Length: 215
Image (tube, rainbow, N blue to C red; front, side, top):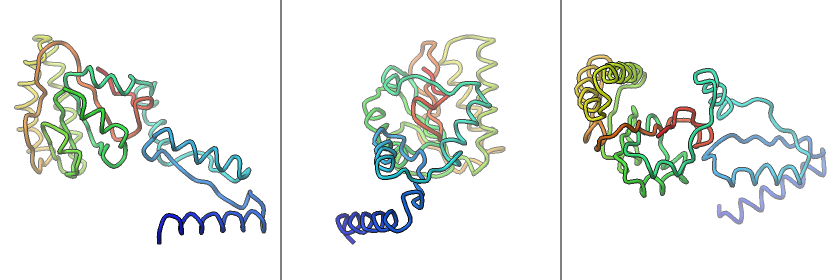
């Protein structure tokens, strides 16, 4: 079926249901998806076509919103283009090639060292300098190891190169024993010194909804 045939079919059915049962018989459900600006066009369309029935609550982006508010107390973060000023970018459980295609050009333009942590290999790994693949559910130990490295390094020195060295050895040892590391590629820590923290892109949301993204 072509796009024209699919759109014609959808239009006929929507018009038929509205004529036979009223617009409230049409249930419009959408969630975050790519979180691109064009997602709001479907809201505008069904608002003008209806009023149709919509959902209350959410099992996708809404659940992510609540989780970030619970964890961080806030879900706002830096503008997405702040990634262009970062030295290191961590993609933790995120596949922007599929879920955030608008982020891919920014990642390609960013000169930062990029690290992907994900239990599944996907095309985003090709955008990164390093890839760490823990077994499903094993990245919690990796996160706690990284947190411990940050605390120890902060007590000894604020030099990020010291932190990077510690993280490399910790990730290799602890992730293999506790995370069940499947494989890793490239350098685990980013290049460069300075005091900037890496920008972290989680599995949920864009820059407006990513509470842990920071430079």
